[in-house]
Length: 185
Image 1 (cartoon, rainbow, N blue to C red):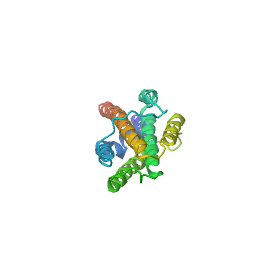
Image 2 (image 1 turned 90 degrees about the vertical axis):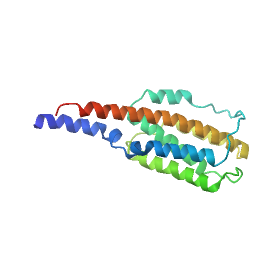
Image 3 (image 1 turned 45 degrees about the vertical axis):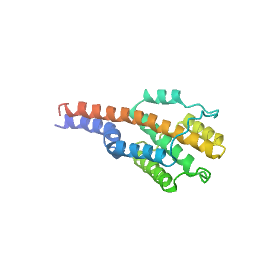
Image 4 (image 1 turned 120 degrees about the horizontal axis):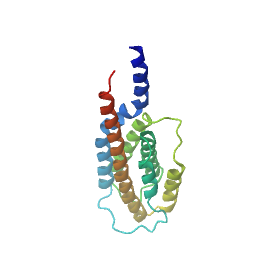
């Protein structure tokens, strides 16, 4: 009996962060809430092309998609935190956005960051390229209503990409859960 317990405990310890992450159970609702709020807080998205010298980080997302669950969860958490910091640390008075919806959007992001923090190792470093991207993005806004509208649209694009990444994490956790359920004790 003891010989089977050791490997089972090790397996459980390895999978705990992904399988027992509370964020995974509420992921769809939280994600939908954030996307809906970013859409509603300012009305229709602009069709204007962004003059921003900061291109969307497609390569960074592609690299993270190839990494493990912990790296993906950390990237999602850090991205949401950077979006939260971007919107919460700036004056949005020029935007004309609905203040209640904007506050709810920030609260939704903050809740996800808090829940994801319980899913990742505190010793893992934030991706420096991700931090640099958001720092450059913040510096490029200029504070005008038009630049904030472009940033809001880009934020929705990020939330959509993070949703795809979150779904990969959920699929990975579910497949690991199924594979461990059928293993002999």
